[in-house]
Amino acid sequence: MQDQILAMLSRYMPGKIKPSGAHQIITTCPFHKDGQERKPSFSVNVEKGVFNCFTCHVKGSIKTLLEKLSVPGSTIEMELKVIQPYLDRQKELHKVEKQNAFVNRDPFKADFVLPESLLGVYEMCPTRLVVDGFDEGLLKKMDIGYDRHNNRIMFPLRDMYGNLAGFSGGATEYSQQPHPKYRVYQGRRKGLDGKVIPSDFGPWFDEEDDFRDYRCENHDFLWNFDRVFKRRMSDPAATVFVVEGFKACLWMIQSGYENTVALMGSYISDRQQQMLHLLGWPVVLFLDNDQAGIRATEMVGGLLWKPMYGRVGVVPYPEEDFDTQPDDYEVEAVRELVNKKQTFIQYRNSKRNSQWQ
Image (cartoon, rainbow, N blue to C red):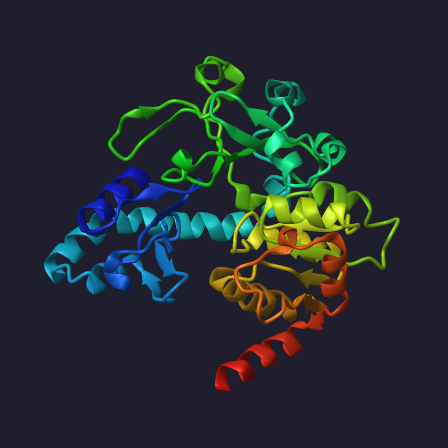
């Protein structure tokens, strides 16, 4: 039924639709910039039947989406008649799963656990990161490797317990930019056209029975959380820093802030929020200083503020340094910025005051 939803949306959405994870699709937003975004900001959750644009903030149900796309009412009724039973069923299953999360399964353990030996396939050191100033010993410690076949830097994804759940491959060549900058490797699956897409790992992966139906969703994890979580008892008064990407997280660790985790994007999922709550430490946000990162800081901080009892801070960037991130600064500069951290409320008020000036 998910394939039917994807096919239905393809009939009315003007932009190219691309899967993003198990239940998300992304495309260019049809409601701003005349659908000519450089980077897609429009997301549809085909499991929950909702959409959201992270740039113009339009959101709602699939019915609302079809109405906004000027699809005739009779056509909308016909389309919803086909998919609504599936959406209702998924809503009920999601509710039951949330109520029985720890009864049926551990929600913090990866659905698929890959063998550690798979790291050996990508044991080559990514020299690009070394040239950028990252310590080779740190890269080895974090099991970061290189996929020579696809020319991608391989960042292992681990669940809370350290189980190897998957890989995210970072592009290293400009020619790869039409494709995802970071690709979460998946097993063999069907595309929107029904054709079989081979595994991102290679044909050998598809031949292994143990990897049949393998899927990985990066928003089920916080990168480096397994290492941070192991220290929660020995350092109960610590603080956890939250950044957007792998390189920012690595640079924070190299700068002396080992208790840093990465969202792997400018979005925080319910599962990632639960992990931070479970850790129980104060949170300091140090997301990217671009439009998406600034919006994400307000969004993530707002979601965490009450559940974390106000123990949420933000590292502010210099006003003149727009479009930067933690790994753009020297180590001493990172430490100076961290020393200027504010509470989330202070940060939000300063941003709102600057908008009025």
